[in-house]
Image (cartoon, rainbow, N blue to C red; front, side):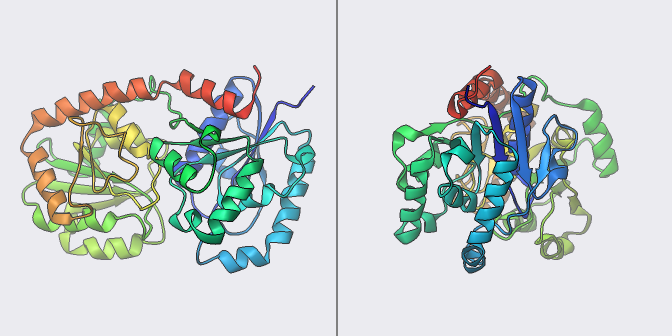
Length: 373
């Protein structure tokens, strides 16, 4: 009988939405009785879940700056992957999240990998959609029985990169929509901690602090906002010192908080509005979905990743994109209209509860992975 064991290979140099979303997905599959294992270089990311994590170091992710290093080390990386899979045999399916693993696992025999499934948490990078990189991506995708795309926009880029449309399935991020709700106690506690009065207009932003994320736009919008406004940025990353320096002139009007995983509902409940400033390769950000489930409207500085999540009348995508003055004008309108905030937050909550039904998501994932119950 074929094995029903699922191995998820996800080695990374950061802990962001995709990494945590994968752990949550594996945890839900384990709860449903599936045999899952996470192969990762950050095994502590699975602490507190039902997911057994095995430490495997496969070096840096494939990126423009690391391409030569990754290519040079590819034979050794391939050997490490093969050994890790061999140690976990028999393997029913392998779930791959990043380009390096997707390209290399295509070279391994099926007796080691079982069913190969890719998860694309955001658009395929433009450099992978043209030239030799596109050819390599499309060729490796022949080994994949299924590609799970987090959004319709991501699905289009996978197809643009040469993957047959019939292989690509859109499945939204898994969220327990019944457990996510507004927290009055969390709002009171955090706003007191932030010295934010009941009339203070609190704008929240949950993000990785990386250059490709446009958190600079959110900070710069403060130059065009008057009154009792507080911006709270929550996250971590190498750009934090630069962002703190950029925000220094605004004094106590801008706060920085560490990663809010574990109390994200409290953080969002303390906000009157959430701003999302996407990178050019954004998928379907959980921060948007979580905010909407709490009942907080979301304003995006660009449509990347937000299109399809922010419905008309339940949030705003500003134009022109990534424009601090346009963002400030939009925030000012929300500041002056509390009724609009409540109305749009409720509409967003209802729409998201419907679109992210967890049972429907898990059934789609099980089908794509070929898992039996």
